Length: 419
Image (tube, rainbow, N blue to C red; front, side, top):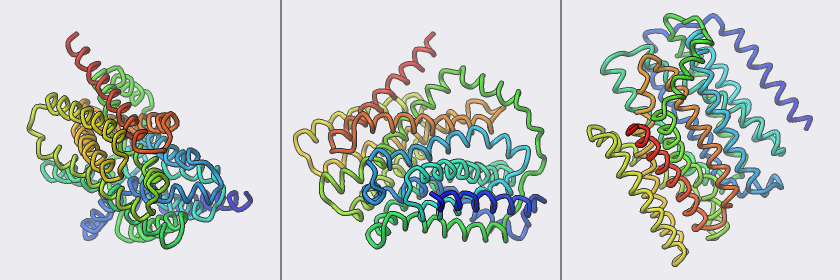
């Protein structure tokens, strides 16, 4: 435990030094704007990489740390909870105190915490580091999203905003594929060494090419922020909409938490195969997002209705098929189609929820994103405890729980609208 305490001290001390060094708010230089834009886009998939790169290593991680499956799955949940809570809090702070230095210090802490995880063999210390990673990633992502809002307007801004979900999807697609090979060649800790090295490289590039983009800092008024939160939470279309978004993302997260155990333990396949399976399902999420962009002119309610119904139908077929034929190919085919529906619902509805309160757009984005991740954390961990990572039937039943919650939330929105 002495090593873990020493690493924690190093993380906090280094962050303090860097914060003092860059507190002067270095402005982004005009000649470096295109490079800093590429760096901002490059950091958007960081949350997906942080959750998915070690997914194929979960079984090996449980064995190496001499702990249970549920305990290593908790590392995913803790990251999502802190990532969600961070989004609720950090937006208003960045509006008042700047984007650059907060996101840069967060990136440094993230790199050090990744290294600390790789060096540790204590699951409880890893849990603490995952909470720190969730908070720092929330600051990094919000800072880089705000980068585009600060520097661009009109059609150019809308173009960049429309690319966010597609670029974010690269994380769930590429991370488990890379992680599977890292697990095969080394072990679970190699994933976090790669995250630490990548983040360190990005820190150096950020120091050279990026800078502060906030033009007019706002006075941080907690009472106004709290009042805005209250009005949003009292809106049933917003709250139930975020719940539906959470169930859509939970479908992806529940596979991340259970899929590697099913692939490697139940079907007896390798970690590389588990990585390829996650790669395919990440591509399914991207297909759902692209389908959402293609059909953006269709009536919103009808899109939500038929996609939710189709998802429920596919889940039902998956359960019956798994009972009759327990086969990895059939499981992945159904999981692929279900995650296409989930990606479609997520892309359409999250954008809709974020746009419900244009007068408080920043707070709405943070609240919708934060509540979504907290919902995902609670639902996914609760369901995986109820239906452990055993076989395809349990995975199908997990999907059924999320599809049913989504259906009930949609009925609540419809009932409220009728009243």
